[in-house]
Image 1 (spheres, rainbow, N blue to C red):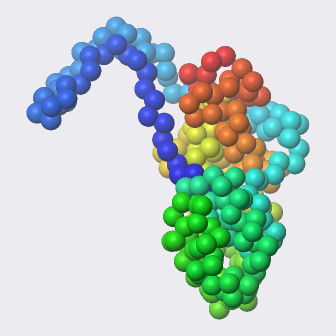
Image 2: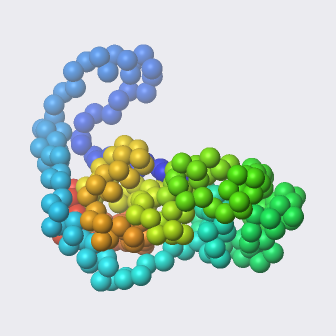
Length: 261
Ligand code: SF4
């Protein structure tokens, strides 16, 4: 999955731009900024958005559910082990790019034992179209060894245990727990992070803040699929550069001041 990138988009406020030289910058910083009329107007225009009410959150996820009752992840896998490997490979890569490589890899190695038998050099050959493939091949072999040595060759079922595997962090653990074992976890990738912040559903400065915020507001009945609904919403509707607000199912509920409807 792609790395979280915070939007750096800023509004044009009409305030004079900061001088470029460091010395001038320091001076400019120390001076009180002139409160131009347009800046005042702009800050008045964007008060902190009102938190969503429970009824609004329920309404939003009811609409997602109605539009797509059984959302599916786009990473191809055959079992919890291949899902784990696919998620580890997807760091800073697209799902489509990962699928292209894993299609052939998983045909010959769909268990930790088979992956070890294949060996690091061959794994590297299979995944060389994916970014950071050398490091990732090393991690796939190391995590397979660890699964055999410590977990009887099975993917463990707790976040803490999955996080001990080479190449697997909290997001990987949340995806695996949700998709392989049906746990109500919320994996926050770049799309979920953006949607959580923009909509005002769960504002946060870090993926963990957004994850915990979403878990707090989303009713349990939606948590099985909430992760996929939000990813798909961010990937195909609430796009980073040009969100399709006119087509958005929740545009009346969204709190983003820059939405285009
Ligand atoms: S209204 Fe626009 S910004 Fe808000 S969630 Fe929909 S697409 Fe995203």
